[in-house]
Amino acid sequence: MKGSALKKICRMEKISLIALLLAALGVLVIVVSTNANTADSKTATIRRVIVDVDAGPDDAWAVYHLLKTPGVHVEAISCVRGNSNVTNVGRNVLRILTAIGKEGEIPVYLGSNERLITHARMVEPENMYFGSDGFSDIQFEGSPPDMSLLRSDALTELFKLIGRYRNEITFISLGPLTNLALLFKVYPDTRQWIKELYIMGGNRHGVGNTQNAAEFNFFNDPEAASIVINGYLGNINILPWETASRDNLVMNQTWRFDVLGNSNNPVVQILNPVERKPLGENDNWMPCDVLVAMSFTHPDLVIERKRYPADVELHGWLTRGQLVLDHGNEGTGNVTIIDNMETAGVVKILMHLASV
Image (cartoon, rainbow, N blue to C red; front, side):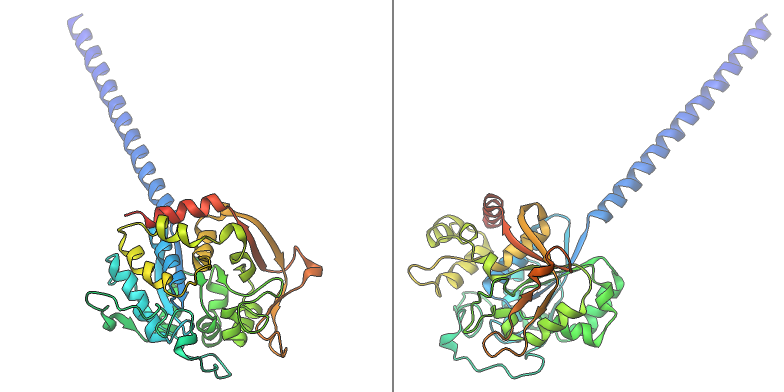
């Protein structure tokens, strides 16, 4: 009896030990699986972007927003002539990156310093909205940005980057489209490898902000805009001048400087004088480029959008550079016009950006 009982006890202990090992193995499998799923989830939520700028304080707000948005990874910033020459644009970008301690983390490339085909007309510095340097010619205190951080191999490096992350990178263009058009021409494969485009530029009702019926970015290089609109077959999301001009998306100066500008945030401290200087007494503040960035990071803020086939006018005497939509085929095509955004959500994000 004692031997039988002992064998029974040993058998039970063996079964218990096996059960315990199986349970432990099950927990391990769950943990490994959970960790793998978490890693996959983190990988899946990374949204890679390249930002092309002609900075411009509105470009600076957009870049800053993208850098502060969880899940968005700015792979590179490329500079194009627009508000100023490309070297000044690069300096302005570095000033913002340095203010937030990211000047060594994100590559900044100097792209094209002239439009594709025709020569740009000469504009006197006093007639340039944001001054000759694109930052209202403000004399900032402290050391200037380290210009040695600027890189000149823009097209080659952007091609390598887009090739490394095929169909993962969104290209966000906030200035003239020269760099992107050159990229498409020199490296045609990038037309298939870029996930989607977001563009600040163009117009949908013929209302522009240049001397003619065109928006500044498209007017500054119409051929580049045409190459991009006609050469890229993926999703093109455009926030045109008329949307940036909507009453609900234009902010008054008092709110801009007394509320949004009342902050010790280093970026806000840089942009306050840059934006205050060019504004006239009754002018409002138009955060054009940051709206495009928000439409990418928070698509739920877009409350009106329509889809069209589109092209760019290159020959019109009065309409050169105008974005032309095929209104008769609304709902088709690959160009989505962002027509309006939720005001409260935009304001909330701006206030978050300005916080320290």
